[in-house]
Length: 353
Image (cartoon, rainbow, N blue to C red; front, side, top):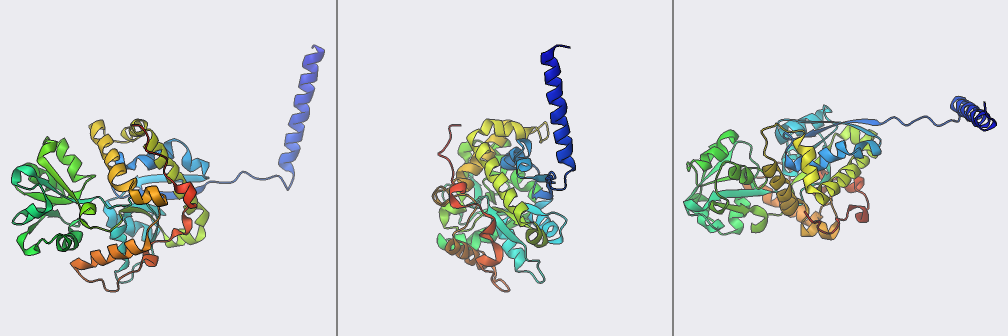
Protein backbone atom coordinates (compact mmCIF):
# COMPACT_ATOMS: atom_id res chain seq x y z
CA UNK A 1 0.00 0.00 0.00
CA UNK A 2 1.43 3.40 -0.92
CA UNK A 3 1.94 6.00 1.84
CA UNK A 4 -0.52 8.30 0.10
CA UNK A 5 -3.30 5.69 -0.04
CA UNK A 6 -2.56 4.63 3.55
CA UNK A 7 -2.94 8.25 4.68
CA UNK A 8 -6.25 8.56 2.80
CA UNK A 9 -7.68 5.40 4.42
CA UNK A 10 -6.64 6.57 7.86
CA UNK A 11 -8.43 9.86 7.39
CA UNK A 12 -11.55 8.04 6.16
CA UNK A 13 -11.57 5.78 9.23
CA UNK A 14 -11.18 8.76 11.55
CA UNK A 15 -14.02 10.62 9.82
CA UNK A 16 -16.25 7.54 10.00
CA UNK A 17 -15.56 7.25 13.71
CA UNK A 18 -16.40 10.89 14.32
CA UNK A 19 -19.70 10.56 12.45
CA UNK A 20 -20.61 7.39 14.35
CA UNK A 21 -19.86 9.07 17.68
CA UNK A 22 -21.89 12.16 16.72
CA UNK A 23 -24.88 10.02 15.82
CA UNK A 24 -24.88 8.43 19.30
CA UNK A 25 -24.60 11.64 21.30
CA UNK A 26 -27.82 12.83 22.99
CA UNK A 27 -27.50 16.29 21.51
CA UNK A 28 -27.21 15.07 17.94
CA UNK A 29 -30.14 16.61 15.93
CA UNK A 30 -32.63 14.10 14.51
CA UNK A 31 -33.91 14.46 10.97
CA UNK A 32 -37.18 16.38 10.98
CA UNK A 33 -40.12 14.28 9.86
CA UNK A 34 -42.26 15.74 7.08
CA UNK A 35 -45.79 16.75 8.00
CA UNK A 36 -48.41 14.62 6.26
CA UNK A 37 -51.09 16.73 4.56
CA UNK A 38 -54.06 15.44 2.56
CA UNK A 39 -55.16 17.98 -0.04
CA UNK A 40 -58.12 17.87 -2.43
CA UNK A 41 -58.91 19.61 -5.70
CA UNK A 42 -62.64 20.16 -6.19
CA UNK A 43 -62.55 18.64 -9.69
CA UNK A 44 -60.27 16.36 -11.71
CA UNK A 45 -56.87 17.65 -12.74
CA UNK A 46 -56.94 19.99 -15.73
CA UNK A 47 -54.85 22.91 -16.93
CA UNK A 48 -55.83 25.08 -13.98
CA UNK A 49 -54.17 22.64 -11.56
CA UNK A 50 -50.71 23.55 -12.90
CA UNK A 51 -49.44 25.26 -9.69
CA UNK A 52 -50.38 22.23 -7.57
CA UNK A 53 -48.96 19.68 -9.99
CA UNK A 54 -45.66 21.56 -10.26
CA UNK A 55 -45.45 21.98 -6.48
CA UNK A 56 -45.63 18.18 -6.25
CA UNK A 57 -43.43 17.31 -9.24
CA UNK A 58 -40.69 19.87 -8.57
CA UNK A 59 -40.26 19.02 -4.89
CA UNK A 60 -41.71 22.29 -3.60
CA UNK A 61 -43.77 20.50 -0.96
CA UNK A 62 -40.78 18.42 0.14
CA UNK A 63 -38.69 21.58 0.42
CA UNK A 64 -41.25 22.83 2.95
CA UNK A 65 -41.10 19.54 4.95
CA UNK A 66 -44.54 18.48 3.72
CA UNK A 67 -45.60 15.02 2.58
CA UNK A 68 -48.63 15.95 0.48
CA UNK A 69 -51.21 13.49 -0.80
CA UNK A 70 -53.31 15.14 -3.53
CA UNK A 71 -56.54 13.89 -5.07
CA UNK A 72 -59.80 15.19 -6.55
CA UNK A 73 -63.30 15.08 -5.08
CA UNK A 74 -66.75 15.71 -6.50
CA UNK A 75 -67.26 19.46 -6.50
CA UNK A 76 -67.12 22.29 -3.98
CA UNK A 77 -69.78 20.94 -1.61
CA UNK A 78 -67.99 17.60 -1.34
CA UNK A 79 -64.62 19.26 -0.82
CA UNK A 80 -65.96 21.54 1.93
CA UNK A 81 -67.70 18.65 3.69
CA UNK A 82 -64.50 16.58 3.65
CA UNK A 83 -62.41 19.43 5.03
CA UNK A 84 -65.02 20.18 7.69
CA UNK A 85 -65.03 16.54 8.83
CA UNK A 86 -61.23 16.19 8.78
CA UNK A 87 -61.27 13.68 5.92
CA UNK A 88 -59.08 16.20 4.05
CA UNK A 89 -56.75 18.73 5.69
CA UNK A 90 -57.00 21.34 2.92
CA UNK A 91 -58.82 21.82 -0.37
CA UNK A 92 -59.21 24.20 -3.28
CA UNK A 93 -62.82 25.40 -3.59
CA UNK A 94 -64.86 28.36 -4.77
CA UNK A 95 -64.86 30.75 -1.82
CA UNK A 96 -68.48 31.67 -2.58
CA UNK A 97 -69.48 28.07 -1.90
CA UNK A 98 -67.67 28.37 1.44
CA UNK A 99 -69.59 31.58 2.23
CA UNK A 100 -72.89 29.81 1.67
CA UNK A 101 -71.74 26.77 3.64
CA UNK A 102 -70.76 28.92 6.63
CA UNK A 103 -74.26 30.39 6.65
CA UNK A 104 -75.75 26.93 7.21
CA UNK A 105 -76.98 25.63 10.55
CA UNK A 106 -74.18 23.94 12.49
CA UNK A 107 -71.47 24.69 9.90
CA UNK A 108 -67.91 23.97 11.01
CA UNK A 109 -65.70 27.10 11.24
CA UNK A 110 -63.80 26.32 8.04
CA UNK A 111 -61.87 29.29 6.68
CA UNK A 112 -59.92 30.19 3.57
CA UNK A 113 -56.27 31.16 3.92
CA UNK A 114 -55.21 31.97 0.34
CA UNK A 115 -57.25 33.23 -2.62
CA UNK A 116 -56.01 31.80 -5.91
CA UNK A 117 -58.63 33.42 -8.16
CA UNK A 118 -58.72 37.12 -7.43
CA UNK A 119 -61.74 37.29 -9.75
CA UNK A 120 -64.30 34.52 -9.95
CA UNK A 121 -64.46 33.26 -13.56
CA UNK A 122 -68.28 33.33 -13.62
CA UNK A 123 -69.79 34.13 -16.99
CA UNK A 124 -72.72 33.77 -19.32
CA UNK A 125 -71.56 31.98 -22.48
CA UNK A 126 -73.80 32.64 -25.48
CA UNK A 127 -73.98 32.14 -29.25
CA UNK A 128 -73.65 35.17 -31.49
CA UNK A 129 -75.68 33.25 -34.04
CA UNK A 130 -78.57 33.37 -31.51
CA UNK A 131 -78.44 37.16 -31.53
CA UNK A 132 -76.37 37.73 -28.38
CA UNK A 133 -73.37 40.04 -28.58
CA UNK A 134 -73.80 42.13 -25.43
CA UNK A 135 -75.30 41.56 -22.01
CA UNK A 136 -78.37 43.60 -22.97
CA UNK A 137 -79.12 41.04 -25.70
CA UNK A 138 -79.99 38.43 -23.04
CA UNK A 139 -83.46 39.98 -22.68
CA UNK A 140 -85.97 37.57 -24.17
CA UNK A 141 -83.45 34.69 -24.26
CA UNK A 142 -83.15 31.37 -22.43
CA UNK A 143 -80.14 30.65 -20.21
CA UNK A 144 -79.34 27.10 -19.16
CA UNK A 145 -78.21 26.75 -15.55
CA UNK A 146 -76.85 23.51 -14.12
CA UNK A 147 -77.92 22.28 -10.71
CA UNK A 148 -75.53 23.71 -8.12
CA UNK A 149 -73.99 26.20 -10.55
CA UNK A 150 -72.65 29.17 -8.58
CA UNK A 151 -72.60 31.63 -11.47
CA UNK A 152 -76.39 31.71 -11.73
CA UNK A 153 -76.60 32.53 -8.01
CA UNK A 154 -74.90 35.85 -8.81
CA UNK A 155 -77.15 36.57 -11.80
CA UNK A 156 -79.67 38.71 -9.82
CA UNK A 157 -76.88 41.10 -8.79
CA UNK A 158 -75.47 41.26 -12.32
CA UNK A 159 -78.91 41.80 -13.87
CA UNK A 160 -79.77 44.63 -11.50
CA UNK A 161 -76.45 46.40 -12.14
CA UNK A 162 -76.93 46.21 -15.89
CA UNK A 163 -80.59 47.26 -16.07
CA UNK A 164 -81.83 43.84 -17.19
CA UNK A 165 -85.31 42.82 -16.09
CA UNK A 166 -85.02 39.33 -14.69
CA UNK A 167 -88.55 38.46 -15.76
CA UNK A 168 -87.43 38.98 -19.36
CA UNK A 169 -84.77 36.25 -19.14
CA UNK A 170 -85.83 32.62 -18.84
CA UNK A 171 -83.63 30.39 -16.66
CA UNK A 172 -83.88 26.70 -17.58
CA UNK A 173 -82.56 24.16 -15.07
CA UNK A 174 -80.43 21.50 -16.75
CA UNK A 175 -77.94 18.80 -15.78
CA UNK A 176 -74.30 19.84 -15.81
CA UNK A 177 -73.47 17.03 -18.24
CA UNK A 178 -75.72 18.47 -20.98
CA UNK A 179 -74.88 22.15 -20.53
CA UNK A 180 -72.36 22.47 -23.36
CA UNK A 181 -74.05 19.91 -25.65
CA UNK A 182 -77.40 21.75 -25.43
CA UNK A 183 -75.83 25.10 -26.29
CA UNK A 184 -73.80 23.50 -29.06
CA UNK A 185 -76.96 21.93 -30.49
CA UNK A 186 -78.86 25.23 -30.41
CA UNK A 187 -81.32 24.09 -27.72
CA UNK A 188 -80.36 27.06 -25.54
CA UNK A 189 -79.40 30.65 -26.27
CA UNK A 190 -76.79 30.79 -23.52
CA UNK A 191 -75.52 28.97 -20.43
CA UNK A 192 -74.31 30.11 -17.04
CA UNK A 193 -70.86 28.80 -16.24
CA UNK A 194 -67.18 29.63 -16.13
CA UNK A 195 -64.68 31.09 -18.54
CA UNK A 196 -62.43 28.20 -17.53
CA UNK A 197 -64.94 25.42 -18.19
CA UNK A 198 -67.90 26.05 -20.48
CA UNK A 199 -66.31 28.74 -22.63
CA UNK A 200 -63.29 26.58 -23.40
CA UNK A 201 -65.10 23.24 -23.59
CA UNK A 202 -67.47 24.68 -26.19
CA UNK A 203 -64.56 25.52 -28.48
CA UNK A 204 -63.46 21.92 -28.08
CA UNK A 205 -66.92 20.86 -29.33
CA UNK A 206 -66.27 22.59 -32.64
CA UNK A 207 -68.13 25.88 -32.11
CA UNK A 208 -66.12 28.61 -33.87
CA UNK A 209 -64.61 31.11 -31.47
CA UNK A 210 -66.23 33.98 -33.35
CA UNK A 211 -69.68 32.49 -32.65
CA UNK A 212 -69.17 32.61 -28.87
CA UNK A 213 -69.97 35.60 -26.70
CA UNK A 214 -68.38 35.33 -23.25
CA UNK A 215 -69.95 37.79 -20.83
CA UNK A 216 -67.63 37.75 -17.81
CA UNK A 217 -69.41 38.85 -14.65
CA UNK A 218 -66.22 40.59 -13.51
CA UNK A 219 -66.70 42.99 -16.45
CA UNK A 220 -70.28 43.79 -15.40
CA UNK A 221 -69.99 44.69 -11.74
CA UNK A 222 -69.15 41.45 -9.94
CA UNK A 223 -67.03 41.95 -6.82
CA UNK A 224 -66.70 38.34 -5.73
CA UNK A 225 -63.46 36.41 -5.42
CA UNK A 226 -63.08 32.86 -6.75
CA UNK A 227 -61.24 29.68 -5.79
CA UNK A 228 -59.30 29.63 -2.54
CA UNK A 229 -57.43 27.26 -0.24
CA UNK A 230 -59.53 26.19 2.75
CA UNK A 231 -58.31 24.41 5.90
CA UNK A 232 -59.76 22.03 8.46
CA UNK A 233 -60.07 24.02 11.73
CA UNK A 234 -58.32 21.40 13.87
CA UNK A 235 -55.43 21.07 11.40
CA UNK A 236 -55.14 24.86 11.25
CA UNK A 237 -54.88 25.05 15.04
CA UNK A 238 -52.48 22.14 15.50
CA UNK A 239 -50.23 22.58 12.42
CA UNK A 240 -50.17 26.29 11.58
CA UNK A 241 -46.60 26.02 10.26
CA UNK A 242 -47.71 23.34 7.79
CA UNK A 243 -50.56 25.54 6.52
CA UNK A 244 -48.18 28.45 5.95
CA UNK A 245 -45.69 26.11 4.29
CA UNK A 246 -48.34 24.78 1.89
CA UNK A 247 -49.26 28.34 0.92
CA UNK A 248 -45.61 29.16 0.21
CA UNK A 249 -45.24 26.04 -1.92
CA UNK A 250 -48.30 26.93 -3.99
CA UNK A 251 -47.05 30.47 -4.56
CA UNK A 252 -43.75 29.00 -5.78
CA UNK A 253 -45.63 26.52 -7.98
CA UNK A 254 -47.76 29.28 -9.44
CA UNK A 255 -44.70 31.33 -10.29
CA UNK A 256 -43.12 28.35 -12.06
CA UNK A 257 -46.35 27.60 -13.95
CA UNK A 258 -46.64 31.21 -15.04
CA UNK A 259 -43.00 31.59 -16.04
CA UNK A 260 -42.97 28.47 -18.22
CA UNK A 261 -46.52 27.63 -19.23
CA UNK A 262 -45.45 24.99 -21.75
CA UNK A 263 -43.44 23.06 -19.16
CA UNK A 264 -46.33 23.39 -16.72
CA UNK A 265 -48.66 21.72 -19.20
CA UNK A 266 -46.20 18.85 -19.70
CA UNK A 267 -46.62 18.07 -15.99
CA UNK A 268 -50.40 18.45 -16.10
CA UNK A 269 -50.86 16.29 -19.18
CA UNK A 270 -48.89 13.48 -17.53
CA UNK A 271 -51.68 13.29 -14.94
CA UNK A 272 -54.59 13.49 -17.34
CA UNK A 273 -56.38 11.02 -19.57
CA UNK A 274 -54.56 10.33 -22.83
CA UNK A 275 -57.52 11.74 -24.77
CA UNK A 276 -57.15 15.19 -23.20
CA UNK A 277 -56.24 18.00 -25.59
CA UNK A 278 -52.98 19.75 -24.77
CA UNK A 279 -54.03 22.88 -26.68
CA UNK A 280 -57.31 23.09 -24.75
CA UNK A 281 -55.60 22.65 -21.38
CA UNK A 282 -52.94 25.21 -22.23
CA UNK A 283 -55.68 27.65 -23.16
CA UNK A 284 -57.45 26.85 -19.89
CA UNK A 285 -54.36 27.69 -17.84
CA UNK A 286 -53.60 30.85 -19.81
CA UNK A 287 -57.21 31.99 -19.40
CA UNK A 288 -57.02 31.37 -15.65
CA UNK A 289 -53.86 33.48 -15.45
CA UNK A 290 -55.30 36.30 -17.54
CA UNK A 291 -58.84 36.48 -16.19
CA UNK A 292 -58.65 35.21 -12.62
CA UNK A 293 -55.13 35.21 -11.17
CA UNK A 294 -52.86 37.95 -12.50
CA UNK A 295 -55.37 40.79 -12.09
CA UNK A 296 -54.55 44.45 -11.55
CA UNK A 297 -55.35 44.04 -7.84
CA UNK A 298 -52.89 41.15 -7.53
CA UNK A 299 -50.20 43.01 -9.46
CA UNK A 300 -50.62 45.85 -6.98
CA UNK A 301 -51.09 43.99 -3.69
CA UNK A 302 -49.65 40.52 -4.26
CA UNK A 303 -51.11 37.02 -4.47
CA UNK A 304 -53.49 35.40 -2.05
CA UNK A 305 -55.05 38.22 -0.05
CA UNK A 306 -58.36 40.05 -0.12
CA UNK A 307 -59.53 43.63 0.00
CA UNK A 308 -61.94 43.61 2.96
CA UNK A 309 -64.28 46.27 1.52
CA UNK A 310 -64.50 44.47 -1.82
CA UNK A 311 -65.05 41.15 -0.07
CA UNK A 312 -67.96 42.55 1.95
CA UNK A 313 -69.42 44.03 -1.25
CA UNK A 314 -69.20 40.60 -2.87
CA UNK A 315 -71.07 38.99 0.04
CA UNK A 316 -73.77 41.63 -0.35
CA UNK A 317 -74.08 40.73 -4.04
CA UNK A 318 -74.42 37.03 -3.19
CA UNK A 319 -77.27 37.93 -0.84
CA UNK A 320 -79.33 39.39 -3.68
CA UNK A 321 -80.58 35.96 -4.76
CA UNK A 322 -81.94 35.30 -1.26
CA UNK A 323 -81.10 36.55 2.20
CA UNK A 324 -78.52 34.82 4.37
CA UNK A 325 -79.69 33.51 7.74
CA UNK A 326 -76.93 35.59 9.27
CA UNK A 327 -74.77 37.30 6.70
CA UNK A 328 -71.13 36.33 7.34
CA UNK A 329 -68.35 38.87 7.63
CA UNK A 330 -65.02 38.72 5.85
CA UNK A 331 -63.33 37.69 9.12
CA UNK A 332 -65.66 34.67 9.35
CA UNK A 333 -64.46 33.39 5.98
CA UNK A 334 -60.85 34.46 5.45
CA UNK A 335 -57.80 34.30 7.74
CA UNK A 336 -54.76 36.20 6.38
CA UNK A 337 -52.41 34.98 9.13
CA UNK A 338 -50.87 32.27 6.92
CA UNK A 339 -49.86 34.55 4.05
CA UNK A 340 -46.20 35.44 3.52
CA UNK A 341 -45.33 39.16 3.72
CA UNK A 342 -46.43 41.16 0.64
CA UNK A 343 -42.94 41.24 -0.97
CA UNK A 344 -42.95 37.43 -1.00
CA UNK A 345 -46.33 37.44 -2.77
CA UNK A 346 -45.50 39.83 -5.58
CA UNK A 347 -45.91 38.66 -9.15
CA UNK A 348 -42.92 38.86 -11.44
CA UNK A 349 -43.34 40.90 -14.64
CA UNK A 350 -45.46 39.18 -17.27
CA UNK A 351 -43.33 36.37 -18.70
CA UNK A 352 -42.90 35.54 -22.34
CA UNK A 353 -45.02 32.51 -23.20
